[in-house]
Image 1: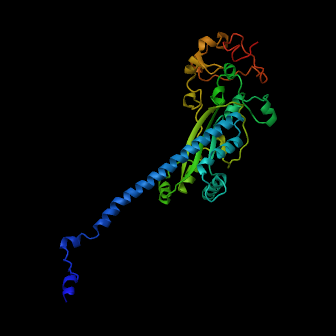
Image 2: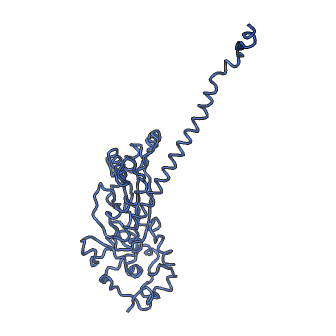
Image 3: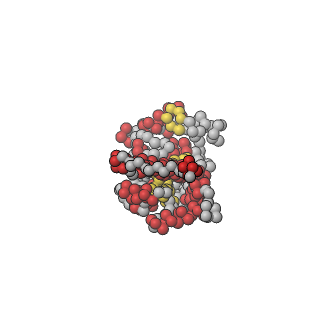
Length: 342
């Protein structure tokens, strides 16, 4: 009896909760949702933005590698395609369920093609264009004879400039004709499904290729790069629906490129600007600039009216000399340094 008295557990009856406590039940869950939702969206947006930035950087480096390959291989579209896709392999590393990064990359491109019915990516060669080859092609170049395609001489550009000036059809000079300018459109597939729907909503007026990507929830990443040619540019044949195209292959108002007028002030090449400004500091064969009065003989620059200053045309009466046999004035300051003069 005593044992039960001293060791029996004490029975406590719960006190009734206050009325205000009962009314506030569930507020913690609501507050958590209000705070967690924007934080979750911010985290997902940060992840998406990081992946977009990585894709943009990888495609930019791949575009640079493609331009380097083209500059040393006569602006070959095939070289551009091979170099670009090879340089994209780090973007698809690790390969995951695929055998290697190249296989994973091709699977991604195949999905893009199935969705859009277009090439998985596109590079447009904007310069040199067809009018540049009309103005500056050389039929006696070895590469032109081997391929049977129009080619532009990459040698002695300063001497060519003195002889030809500005082309009638293109409005460009020989320096611009030897500058490779390419524009990339690369498809970015969002990681988060909701972002793809946002891309569809943001689709606006643009080229047919860009609009097709946006309609499928794919964001086009566009980049442009210019580089000086290190070989003779050649006008190669291309597949109209392929990955690498020329600007003249695109239909006006229905795709990426809209041709500019023959005004040097609107060009984006290496040697741009009005002829009056270009004449003040003409490029030399060594790449430096000097005042025009110090490097051009008076006989090569007759006085012309101001209204004809921006419309100089190639000299029709002079026949281009064979390759590597262009005559150079013995008084040229570059003689004995960069040129072999006779």
